[in-house]
Image (tube, rainbow, N blue to C red; front, side, top):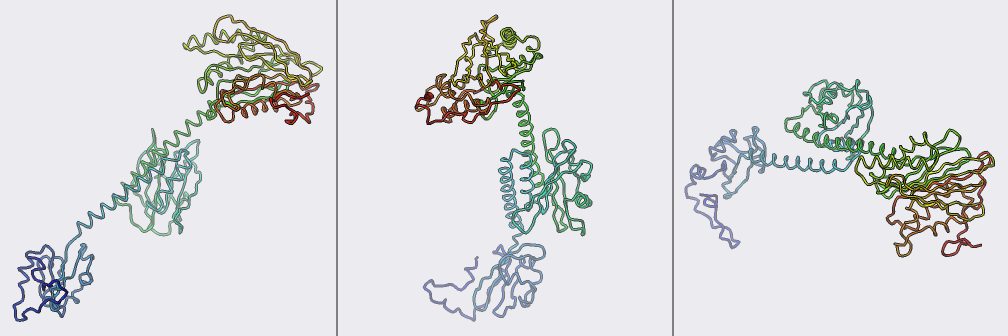
Length: 562
């Protein structure tokens, strides 16, 4: 039997239900209540309780037959909907059977509401952890990752969150986020000595999760992370952040209200700490690898030539892979005891890291060999022998092209260059007349065969004249109108004609610039330029008021007009 069995029936045509015989006996409510799952309270038109089912009696012991419902002290029942009574979640609804009879149905929904709340809490927990994983997956810098961790923890997990990184170089860096009136928490940071860290934080950094302790808030306040403890209603917790071999840091969370973190909240904190530890470990590992890469790249970059009497050096370097900053071209110089200098520029086979490592080996060989041999031809043959031993030992077909020379100054400010060629492009000389000469220097590749043929040439530079060495990244640069035409030696000579007054650094930069203009942002090989200029007596560089030729005075093909 249902409510419809006892309610006045509606004909369905909008007319009121026909009046029933008032002389009919009242229904047996106890019989009806046996078939209703909910508790049933029946009142007459005056609000007097006429019947209370056994279920309703257990849920609402204050309600008894014969008393007025309004005086029973259960306002939630009368108001309808969900309400809490004696620690239970109840749900009531009112059904008017007639003007003289009203029923209240009451149901215990404690378990259903608890399951719904648990489901909503789990969904919120999963959504929060998913957002944490997404946001912490982006920063690859430890500082930004640490700031993101404390920013995510407030206010979702705490009112104040402090992250302490594992001490490094005798310092422990920390970040703190505080909840303010604004939606975005305030983040600050600082540094502490490891001995000044709270004991619980130091314990967490050792890999142990401390138990909840009352004095943690006081120690955190002494460290300047929390306000001075004026009341005992501050709850704090500290957890280690998992790392590779040791914790990456420790996370301290605190909130007001005197309510300790429950087990479910601690589980959420641990899940958050695990994700934060993974993000920090990744960022720290990336920083270590970046530092190692920067150190290695710095050691593989071409070294600027050593200062030499009467010589002005100019260099330009652009690797094929700009993101690496290193490549297969190299240059440099070393001082000789007699006042001269050994200088060199070369190109090895390959590109990228492997080529850069090979150039580092060549530069180390030259650094050692120039101390036992200063003659360019013999020095280049010694380099060839060392290179053959290296490539054979590692079963690699590496080779290089090199121009190696010795420069010695004269009293009149001029320079004498004795150069040896190992399969490299011939140098160019910018004379004071404005002409550009090509030095007829030839030779075989270095590192291919024993006892290669090495070409040698001697060049005299008057004060103000410059010798230019360059790699094939300049002449083989492809660009132009069609995008695949090589720059070539002729265009390089045309670009240098009339630039004899330029200082060596400006000249090297000009060669790099005209090459890049020809490329128009296209792919290219490694580019290296080494210029050495005779500075004149006492090392004074002549003034260069019109060092770069006027573009209007040049023809369309780049050749200077007379």
